[in-house]
Image (cartoon, rainbow, N blue to C red; front, side):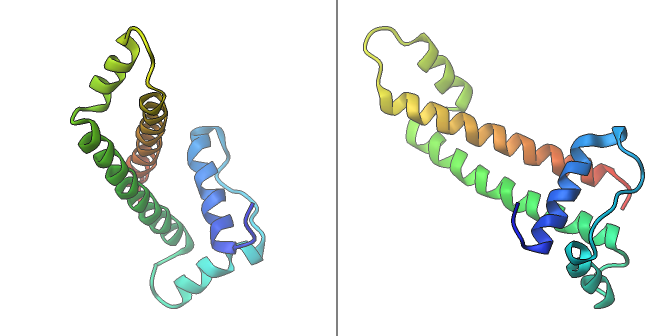
Length: 130
């Protein structure tokens, strides 16, 4: 894992989200890892550490969604069809396979999956009390 304390905090928070109700209400976090968050609160940017983490992860999710939307748009433009149509065309293809298209299919599928993951993170955080 990165030595960057903010990245550690986001990593910890991301894992909290993934575990949902299976986890207790408190966790131990080293002071070093949490210090940047505390500083943001002291500066008055957020009311407390929970709000700071929530908003930082929401910002990260929005940035990731925007990035993957742009990559998905590139693939839609290249093939002039939706991912599902492209997937159907790849899976139904008979004869000689075009490896570039299979490579693009794998990449496009990863973009769609990653976008879906970050959209779920965003939805969960927007639905939680903040």
